[in-house]
Picture (cartoon, rainbow, N blue to C red):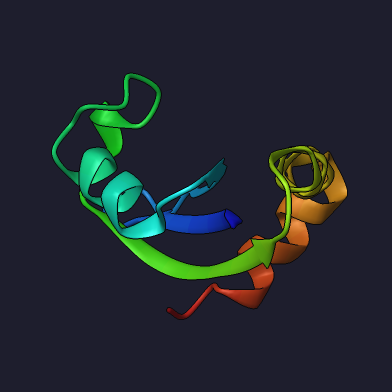
Length: 81
């Protein structure tokens, strides 16, 4: 199984979207500063994740959610979390 996950920076409120095989491990890596692109915006809160059957499907969903309008909708959806 693969996952698309959504994180929110508790420092600046930004939403991060990623895909992985192990959500809990990846979430821990983000909060320990082991992911270059998110290191400066810790701590992170795991908002949600979606299950995918293949890596390809997860990457397609990640790309879709990272499109401008979809990312803005996610920010609105999770604005108070």
